[in-house]
Amino acid sequence: MLKKIITGVIIGLLGVILFSGQVVSSGSTQHLPEVTIERVTFKEIVMDPPPLEAGGHILVSAEDFLPLAGGSADWYKNRGILRGSKGATVTAGSLAAEVDGIPRRLEVAPVIVGDKFYIPLNLALEILGWPAAGNGGLAPEPESTGINLPPIRGKGSIHFRYYPVYDLQASYDPAGERLAGELLLAYQNNYSFPLQELHFNLPANGVYGNGAELTVSKVYVNNRPVPFNSRGSSLVVSLPVSLAPRETLFLSLSFTTRVPPAAARLGRSGNTLMAAGWYPLLAPQCGDTWAGMAGTSYGDPYFAGAGYYRVRLTLPSGYTVLASARETGRSDYGTWTVWTFNSEHPIREFAFAAAPDWQLISRQVGAVRMVVASRGEPAVAALDVAGEAINFFQATFGPYPYSYLHLAFIPLDGLAGMEYPGFIVLSNRKSYSPATVVHEVAHQWWYNLVGNDSIHAAWIDESLAEYSTLLFYRRRDPALYQVKLSEIRRLAGQTNQPINLSLDDYGSEQDYRLAVYNRGAGFWLDVEAIAGTGSLQQALAYIQRYYRHEILPPQALVTILTYYGNVMPDLFTAYLWN
Image (tube, rainbow, N blue to C red; front, top):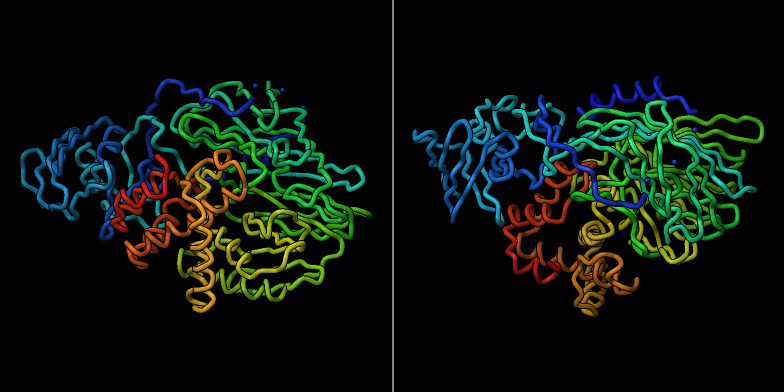
């Protein structure tokens, strides 16, 4: 279904946008009057709080879902009262119900999860006077269009599964120390309210950039020049007219990025270029604000929604490029070579590394072509463990949808490794550790496929990557697992800080790592002890299905763990602030 949604967008992007040639900082979104949205399917939207599954049926939060279409719900203790074109009374844990005063036996019982009263979706649709279509309220198949929903009112509690299309063209001149690029963006408003502006983050201009500088020179929307304001690490583009939910616009902009001399995530070291956070990246919305950047040099100080990428890079001939996408072509033009890439599916961002003297080895692991670039580092060992890890995590969490996974050993200070979509960089300035490879492969599920707010909720992807690494070694090497478990327990014991503080609130990288990585892994081990390994993996697999290519809100994670794992509030309050 997702492929169908963007097909027209891609065609329009290629046919409508032509390059021709300045509002900033992340701020509150400008909500215009509420609108009613028709012809919506269940699979097309993401709901907050999330739906749940029970015996093949979908459950929705009554007090959040019914008001979307004019209904309402109240509940006290375990009894719920539902109102719409029909009225109903239901009881949590019971199949007995009354609809318009007539006794009814439900197919699945309502349930209370936290402070939410969940009811079967097909019952909710009946209360609203809307027949359940598709699978009659059963959980739809992953690629089905799902259940038709009644007209819904635009509210911040839902958004659509639409993903922008980035078409990037850039050239790198080592002598000029710059990347010069153009971005063509097809953007379909995936929010349930109109937008008057779009916000972008400019990671290169933040503390993260180590002195890099990203300059935007001109912006066009639907072939018309529009005002924009670029200040620091933020770019705000004013739209000529408000963009209604599900409407599409085409934006083009030109930019240059000065790449600093640094063995960093964005930098050049010797003849190696590492480029992450090098272009304007759409800012995601969190509540009623656009997410900006953290002012830290540690952690992941920016995050993004997922998008499709088509990229064309021009570099001096002799360079080899590995990137966050599948290579689709390579053409030589005298002293320059043009590389083209396609992400195949949505990814969080496009990062790449380039060098003229790499040695490449590759291997096919199932449907995934794995490539490692090195200069004498243990490439075969990295390839071996990455292949084992990708097979293990697919069996544990769900399929890896891309046909590529690239690894590169590069000069990188302060980090043993760093994850990007379909692309992992490993520092050649630190001793090689196979556990680092496993951790970064786990991030392909926890960061890329399911994203999170890495500024205020870094614990989600980092602690899950650590826990996933422990799961891998528990199966692969039980003795080594015990060693790693003891080390994580030892380090976790050095802090009592909550695992869910923002990056800035930790104050130092050491405090951040002790809490988020080590104490965070302890959180998941405690959840596993309460829920059981099977129930926890069921919960995590559901997250991978429902939030694939989305950003997982922390409260939604708590709801899912409470439901699938029967985790009580005491455990959350022991680890999580507020």
